[in-house]
Length: 87
Image (cartoon, rainbow, N blue to C red; front, side, top):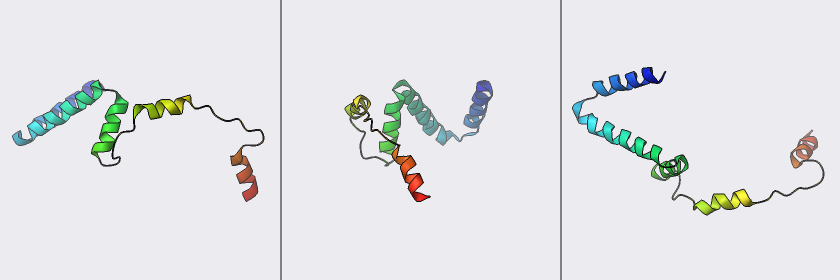
């Protein structure tokens, strides 16, 4: 499968107009550079560049969430109680 995909990409590149080759090279270079960095960083960078986020969250935010302990509350789960009340 990867060989077929590479061959297909080569065909696409061969069909590009000369003025589009530089843009294709730049896009592939960005993709290769993003692969080198962590995928989480690349995804965050893409979110900012696309305008979906204003800035990337500080790395300590995720670490703090991982350290948070879950509360254990006795009784039925709230989801079950809600479903039963709606019946």
